[in-house]
Each structure stands twice: as C-alpha cells, then as structure tokens.
Amino acid sequence: MIVAEQKPLEEIKRLVADCHKVLVLGCGTCVTVCFAGGEKEVGILASSLRMAARLDGKEIEFLEATVQRQCEHEYNEAIAELVPQVDAVLSIACGIGVQTLNEQFPTKLTLPGLNTKFLGEPTEQGVWEERCQACGNCVLATTGGICPVARCAKSLLNGPCGGSQRGVCEVNAETPCAWQLIYDRMIALGKLDLLLEPTPMKDWRTSRDGGQRKIVREDLRL
Amino acid sequence: MAAERRVKYVKDLLDQIGLGGTRLEMYFLSSAEGARWAEIATEMTRRIRELGPNPLRDG
Image (cartoon, rainbow over all chains, first blue to last red; front, side, top):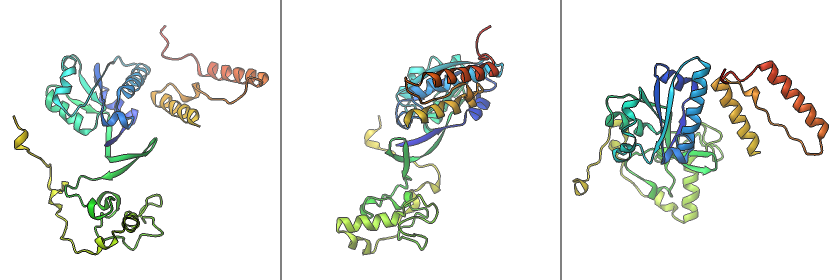
C-alpha cells in the first residue's frame, strides 16, 4: 500500500494561511490504513486547524469530507459541489490524489496535507516498512520473495556487498541486509542453486528514471 | 502503555496547535490514594490558573 505521513501542522497552516474557506478532504483507501488521511484524521486535522486559526486571530472556515479514493474521478464527483465554495482544497490523500483533484477541478488549487513516503507493508501495528519501488521488472521469483531493489540500500542484484555485517546493512543498524534475508530464504526453500544461474542484465528502462510511466490496456478502453 | 503514548501524542498536538500540551496531564494512582488525588487536583488547578483560561473560549 501507499504509505504517507501528515505534514507538520506549521507547514499546513502556512499552506492555507491566505484562505478563508478550505475543504479538508480525506481518502478512504491507503492513507486510511496508515492512519494519515482517513475520515478520523480529517476530523482531527480540521479541528486542529480551526483552533490554531482562532489562536492566530484568523477567520478560516474548514469543511470536512472524505471520499472512497481520491485517485479516481468517479469517486471525487461526490464532493464536486463543495469545490467552488472554497478557496482551496487541502487533500490528505497521497500525492496521486492531490494531483487527480488538481486535474479534475483545475480552477481550484488542491494542496497537499501529507508527504507520500513509500510503498510498503504494516509489519506490526503502528510500523510500516518499505517493500516495493515499482521498478517495473519484478525479480521476486529469483530472490525468495524478498526485493533487493527496495530493501537493499544499493539495490544490488548480486549482493551482499562488503558492508553486510552479521546480517545487518552498513547504512543502518536497524535494517537487515536484504541479501542475507534472500540467502537465508533460498536455503530454507531448498532453492539456493537458483542464485547461481546466469541471469540477463535487469532492464531498468521500466523504472522511474526515464520519467513518467504509463500503461494502456486497449482491451479495457471504451 | 498505549494510553500513555496517546496522551503524549495529544500533548504534542496541543503544542503544535498553540494551546499548550501542559493543559493535559496523565497520572497513575489507585482509588485508595485519596490524599495523593487531592494533591494532584490542587497542583493541576494551580497550573491551569497560571496558564490562564482557554484562549478559545467565547467571550
């Protein structure tokens, strides 16, 4: 899932400082599950901003709403009537939601209330860890289901490097060495010899370095 | 414990809002500790009087 974190309140206050009426808009999908931008968080943020605005002697009205998913136009239609009523929309969805709203309602600026951090997994309650970097060419079949692109600090495909010490990455003592994990898993699966097979160079053209990516499914187009 | 972490979170939030996290406090005591309860109530009252009324109150 997409994992995001709310921007500091001070930063959000600056973003809406010149507004008189703001719609705080939440999203019911990824950011709800990582407790950053769901309905509850909309309520807390709108309350905090109301209090902060009054303490600063400002008169700003904050409306509250949440849609199922801000990345789809059909779901955003539910709040279309509110957009002309406000000076700005403060979206607490991920960056995709913010941009979709800006495309869908181009006469109003939709501001980001979150920092979108990574694609990851909740490994325990209250903890999220990065797992995927959307490189576009998945090698998980050959690495025991552990991603060397996302979890190795150097994204090595033939690790580990010399910095791997006792199963820990040299970059951060709290980060396990991804290649240690891969080796351990391949041994446990009895598939260690797979790592010995020659593999062609990874095609990195599908990764983000070439700019914005796009998929077209002709069979799904109207 | 979980409640302690949440109280800390709200105190931080109150600081960010500008109301002040010192207006909220968590104490641990049992129902048998009457005297300590009175002390805590007195201390909290003194603290709040020093901070002044909630600036968001109307009027």
